[in-house]
Image (tube, rainbow, N blue to C red):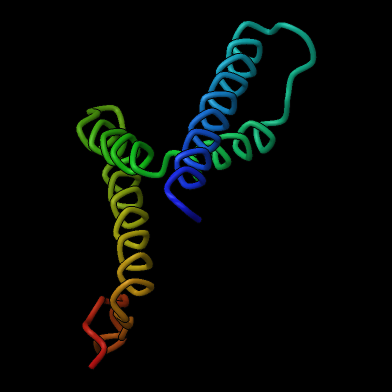
Length: 118
């Protein structure tokens, strides 16, 4: 693509992201207030995933802050906190594996740990 074509493509993606976010926001408002038929949670999650694809930079920070809130919450049990942190760890390992070639190895029957694949 030339400069003008790339610019139009970026504008199109930004407009699509705005539309998707607005649609998801409306759907969430309707679900929270009980307006109309109740959409399945998996349908709302699918819309969130479509939005995240269009705005991946924002999603990572938002999820990290949410994990921090869960860990800081005194009403959440230790096991649940560790499970949420483990999910974050697994997501980071998967991203690093794709980007940098990390591999998972078991250490003497213990849980897997990330190591650099050489």
